[in-house]
Length: 236
Image (cartoon, rainbow, N blue to C red; front, side, top):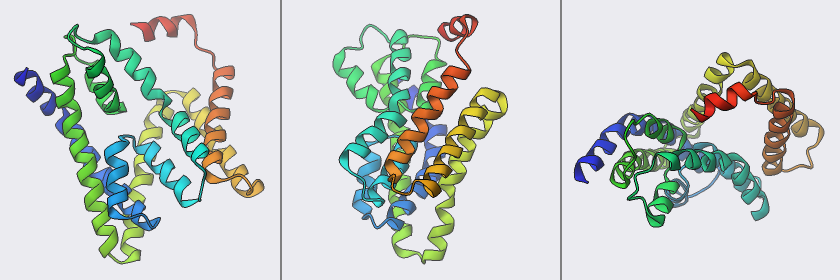
């Protein structure tokens, strides 16, 4: 058990280092939106999702309702449920319900990718180790960013906040270059966001994110339906 835990922690170190720098920008962003250091860290500790956290802070800053926040997080983070379902096929028999609930909390894109690449069944101790180091990196980065944002001049923190935009660009550019279908969906979502911002200002920021994400996803699904061959490749 200890060996598997240490192995998981070792595999999580590269993710931790990446999260440390990105979450620093999130911590700065929280301070810019007049959230406290404690609130910034609390968000990162309870919600291990970069896109969801940034969107959530945007809803808070815009004075959005609780319903907007729930819908926003549901739309953005729905993919983690699908990742968890996929990983459930690789779990060791020792995974009981309690282990599944705890591990489900820590599933992110990067953790899912590393866990999926393992050839042996995933044991609870391995998954806990794999989640722990990225969790520490994300939480620590948020804390450092929030502290820096609280003491640094506004001009400096504004520049540091650009790290988050760089993160999102890094997320969407590779798949967009690889698959034109992804690029089309991204462009549709961006266009809808611009239209709502300038032509429909009565729509709050939270609902704008939800509407753009849902409509672009539906249009993408209608224009580019998944073929039987792609279904077979995904299953493999």
